[in-house]
Image (cartoon, rainbow, N blue to C red):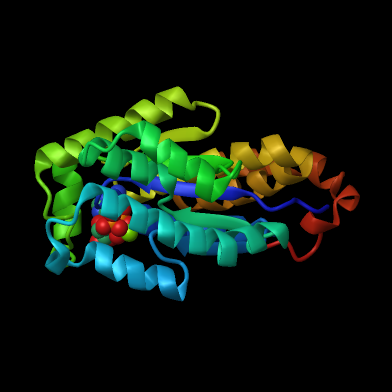
Length: 261
Ligand SMILES: Nc1ncnc2c1ncn2[C@@H]1O[C@H](COP(=O)(O)OP(=O)(O)OP(=O)(O)O)[C@@H](O)[C@H]1O
Ligand SMILES: [Mg+2]
């Protein structure tokens, strides 16, 4: 069974856990037999990473909001043309650490640039390409900044004020409300493992929705594996239903022998 490529983005403020959770998401999707390409913005290409260095450098303090936004979209144009679109066309699932929602949140909410202008650039650079799914890791500003601060010297964004980050967070939350079909909101103040389990369950329902019963079986197998680690009794209940699932496994080679949990 071939599942066509999908575009999944992970969003949230500083230290929300995007990079940490994206690694788990990649692993989970790969274990479900999907080909995954993990990437990030700004960046994801050689030129994009150069632009990222400029954008994050504290030496560029005071950069105009318009310049910052145009650089974000310049990096994005390169990323979409050279990496994201070709990967999707080849059937990969693209997992991207930040995308245009971050531009609305940071340059729109944070810097005060009009959403209309950002929308114009979005249309120009992306055409009709939008993420299929966006996982928003919502973290309180103080918690996120404390986590990010543990990493060492602050980048140009991390030096912003708490009020800046409150505006960023508010825009993310508004967008999650406005696009409920695409967004999944996750409370990222909780420990890594709890966040991971919730995201895994989000991905599992999503896979089930788009992939039918075959992917539901994949979900059951993986969920059982993770439940086994914390609640053996519950795991055996789930496992008791396996014969019914496995009776249909010959209909779906992708979840036959060799399927990894
Ligand atoms: N839920 C969590 N609870 C506690 N610590 C966490 C949690 N998620 C991530 N961390 C830790 O916080 C730090 C920042 O996490 P991570 O780099 O994944 O965040 P990020 O959202 O990618 O940050 P940035 O916006 O700066 O890229 C890391 O040291 C990570 O181990
Ligand atoms: Mg990160």
